[in-house]
Image (cartoon, rainbow, N blue to C red; front, side, top):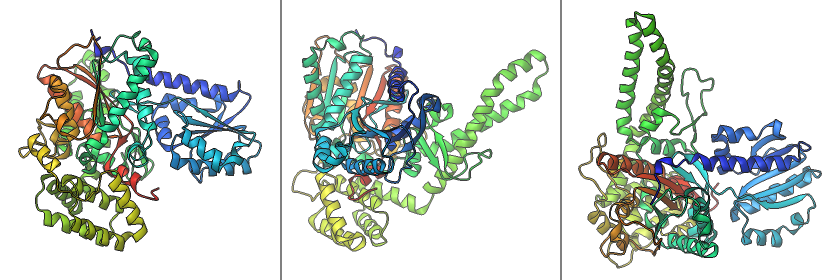
Length: 595
């Protein structure tokens, strides 16, 4: 019997990470005898900065002289020990080698230790052995691993913080992504969640994760996962390649639009305007967004069109609460009122902050350019007004619009039409080369074709068109302010990933049946079923997105949970992923010579 998911606490995962990181710092500090300078890759540094207690570990009392972003022009400081926390990324390895070479030259007496997170690969060892042998021979340079493979981004969100996972897995063919994902999921079961009795995966790469999980279970004979009561009754693993349409569309929830316009990294976002009147800085206002912000928790999953009304209603309520002060006559009433005052003042502050954010978002979304872009995206998904779509893409290319914007839209058009017609492909290729350069465009198109984003149409049945119609991916009767379907997150388009998730949760017995969405979508599927698995609709689910998930998809999953609760069918879903993505970051990671 699966134990109540209400008892699950993801903070335990965060606490273990803090303990391991604290132990690492103390070990490097050598009992207070040495001081250390830390150089950390951005995806880990964002997470460290988002957590006050994690950030507090890197203090002078622990012998840390500073924490710096790891990049080519990183600030090199004098320290007994320079520590590098890096992700295992083949492309970044050569940049790391250059930084190490500069450091050893400028600071010859400093000990250098590189920690690969979660561990280094044979490919990276091969690169250092064949291209940087002189570095390996340096007496003061050591390489090690730090098994920090999962970060708690929110109360229902876990991330491996691997921003280039889709590129590494699909474009580079790096099988370690599937291997590490499986090991992370196995570790979660062994250390925190207990054995999950039903594991299902859809998509070629997702099926590989299940195969590795099965191997790990056989190697350990599952003993290590049986000591903890099961907190989940199902684990669903989705391959990002199953649904590439969703990340190429613009997210239209409040949180999704913040990510689209300003970029959210581990909950941290920098706004180019003042968040409140008390702010000292005019621009680059940094803020941490999570469920700890009660107002953000309420509005983050909403379609942006409804956020203004909610903020206005909240402001009226706060004003009315302040007005009640005039009605207080008795001392007892005054004491009760004063108890509620701090909460009201905090809500007042948050209303001001989110009103400023919403106002700036509104300036963007109400612009002619933004609205036209959304209209074109919706035409593409509905497969209508093709001439207007092609003219718009041509216009973007001819005026040399940002190449990520152009390739994102061409990718969406190609995906929705199961490839470009040969004539259209050649036309786009020609004008792209005129605007962005011949070598660059040829390499870029090769990369996008390999990933399945931009392809040439072949004579075969239209997959996306039939799926869109059969599974109602477009909602013609959407009420954005009072939605009844996940299509609200994209103002009409229901993410294919959410349709698949809903099918697996609400119709578990259809697994393997013909005519289901799981059956129609291309790619392998795999399953591990424990003999004690209880049939029926699951109530506690762990969902893992391999290759990334968008914030709008996360918003829509939370919406589904609320809908099920309203129907007296409560379900708790925890989302895990290799990384939180958006279309711009995905496209940029695939472009050659990207920053």
